[in-house]
Amino acid sequence: SPIALTHTLFCPIVCSNNTYRTNIRRSTMRIIAIGCEYSGVTTLLDGLNQWGTKHHIHFHMDDHFTIPDAFHLSEDEQQAMLTMLPTLKERFQRFQIVYHVRLVNLYEQILLGGFHIEEEVYGPRYYYPGLQVSDTRRYETEMPADTILVHLHARPEVIKKRMQTTPHPHTLIESEHIPDLLAEFEQQYRQSWIQRKVNIDTSDLASDELLDVFFARARGHLEPRDALLLN
Image 1 (cartoon, rainbow, N blue to C red):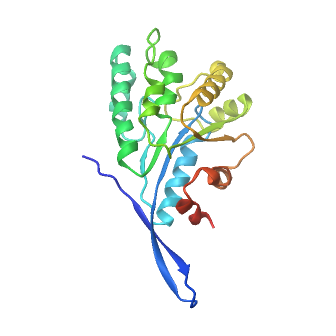
Image 2: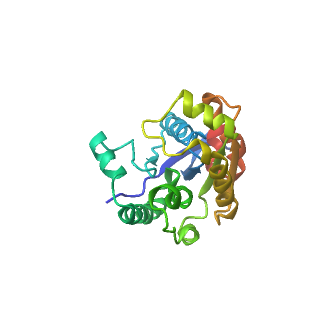
Image 3: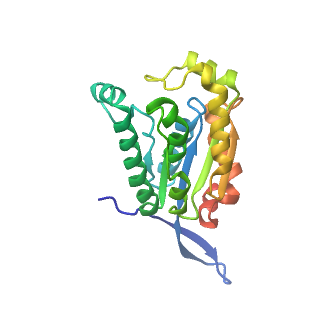
């Protein structure tokens, strides 16, 4: 079973005689990134994962909550997920969300894409119409207080253009739903009980600019030991 992974920072401290000693600090960075498809969720998480590798931080990353999970499943397995009965999709999604709430507590460096909030938006609309998501807020009471919620969004016309120019293998959303989806993600972001929040409009951002914007806005939510890495 998974174990908690931590990264230790050796921070130099100047002593009175101008020599240096090291202060051992533990780094934690738990990030949940949400947003309508084509808003930049995967781009941000991939950037954070690469940044972590550069700084010797091993993130546990899960960006597979959107059915059919194009990251870990073969094409045949993805097709099986797409044709699964709605009640089974609801049960599968609920089970994997509960499991990952456990992982948020086990791992001190973890990146989650979409997660429980995405399910609140996509589940009743696309996976199991007529059924509702339950326990979304309760999940948040079980997460560590240092969890950061990042909401990524873009103007409807930008989302639509990205869908056309760089389509995903299994695009979930439909163009006519984009305004409503953006509004629903915004509502869920505002209603979330997670206290540390970052809101980013990616409409006019290049992919390689997103990480810097995130760190600039998230710095105040990071533990002091983590913010040191940004200097």
